Image (cartoon, rainbow, N blue to C red; front, side, top):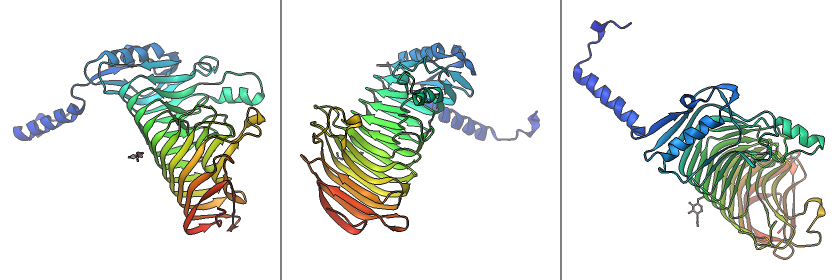
Length: 398
Ligand SMILES: *[C@@H]1O[C@H](CO)[C@@H](O)[C@H](O)[C@H]1NC(C)=O
């Protein structure tokens, strides 16, 4: 215990310190905090805490002042939980110190679409936390060939604006880890995604029908695309992302539908791909569509042992159903590959297989160097046109 006589600070200094402390807490000054624990959540990993989380959300959402939902350390079991707006304030922070755990029985949420869903919200920050989707049971079911639920996305962000996801860890989702759909201005940073390299359909971050999404400083290891970009995505920025294992960063599949919004202005900058199936890919169905992909920049990328480092595949037609003999309607143009180097795990490191009806145009290769077995790799072009600058290896096939 402190000896009172040792407290020799002059009153003025004590006062100054106090004021500092007050102004620091003032960052959340007007914010009210709702702790899920005081609303009945149990950090034991086995008691269903869904109701406590939903009541914290209703309180936060009904608050006219900024609100914090606090999740302490420990494991909280949650079933399907939908956090809906609109809310009375536009500054709700989920501050998560602990882990949210999905039911281990995949049947419980396997047909719900999403495990955790935020919809129609404006101004929500999710800070920290581990989301444990417990997907391994469902993956086993799928690989056994039995009939299984399709699985839930771990975190869905839907029809929402001004969202921040920071320092979140997503483990073993049943299906996609994070899906951004119909949103504007979403910043994700320091996100970690982890699932087995052979886990089915466990895309890391999927973005569609959204504008102004930023993914920074993130590490994604999973069984499907690290990032997949669907129709209607514009102004997407991906920077400093490490991918692997996984299927790479993929624009597509596009052109599944006849009437489809295009993808425009996507930047993938400073990324590494390690042992992945693809590096940077654009993929479309081989059938008619109004879709397009344009103004795309892939820059400062290191490939290590990647099967298809640079690929455009416009003849996607799973099981040869609904498209054989048809050309993709998706128009691919103005795609730049700049400063891309490393190793390919196959001979063909650059492959442009474009639509016969709408050949790819405005493809630019600049300072690309990819090798296969310490030798020059190969490039293959079908219906693709563009230009090169600087050193380009394999030699371009335009
Ligand atoms: C492209 O998107 C970025 C954000 O990713 C944005 O800053 C930039 O203004 C957009 N460019 C155009 C021409 O819209």
